[in-house]
Amino acid sequence: MRSRAARHHGRDRFGRIRLHLSRKAFLLGADLWADQAFLRDVQYQSDVNLAARQSIYAYQRPRVDLVASVLDLVELPSSGVVADIGCGNGRYLAELSRRGLAGRCVGVDLSAGMLTAARSAAPSAGLAVSDAAALPLRDREAGLTLAMHMLYHVPDPGAAIGELRRVTRPGGLVIVGLNGSGHMREVRSVIEQAGLGYPRERLSLDDGEALLRGVFPSVTRYDFPAQLQVPGPEPVAAYVRSMSETRKSADSEAVVREVMTRIFPGEHAGPVTITTHAGCLVCA
Image (cartoon, rainbow, N blue to C red; front, side):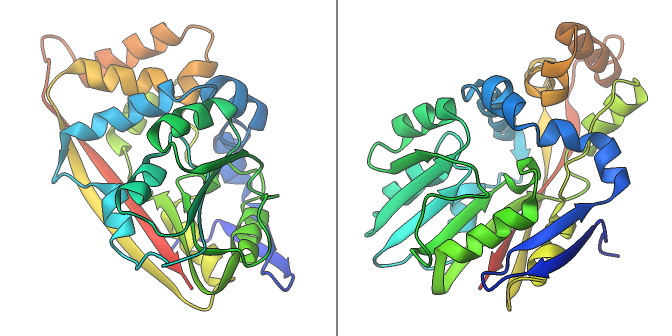
């Protein structure tokens, strides 16, 4: 059954809506996931933590090139703007450039540090620091708007979705990336068992699908399930060390040691299997 964690009320001509997260979602760490100052100034001050989490996918089986897989789903606009909202360190911008995008590519992120990394990845892209709920783009300016793995970091996802629709022209597409509820479940389970707390993502793929179907006439879902076959402790340790919850703790290395002891008990040094489940929603 699809999650019903969100309710939405009120909608303007661009489809802006209000999302009221359930109390359960809030208690599971919504404040940390959407703490804009923490995300901007600590967690994503640079791309170090994001890059650490991205690097663990080198052990994914079957290997899913998520960036290429997502962009392969659509025909890129022959002119105009492609906007990447929450562009992070610029992986989608770089792939768009590699594919010879004819139009202008614009990346937006809350963190200036992230945009420094994006500039290295995609030198020709236009970049702007901005809140996803108040985008620096004109109405109906973009032929394709990406919002990959960022809606769970927005205090009001409904407002951000309204902005995604506002800046996308009629006939254009919006692609939203989110994770399934079972994503990284083995790591999450160990952290929860250790009593260390693991705030679940505020918006899962199921939640996002339900929300977007209330705004866009057409929403097509694509799932990319796989597994990580991690040969030893260090990639998992780097992943745990990069998490917001670990960064926020008083003794982050103690958290890492506790988790590693549970994932790799005694003389067990690997390999371990970890579930991954990314997905995207193509909205028209």
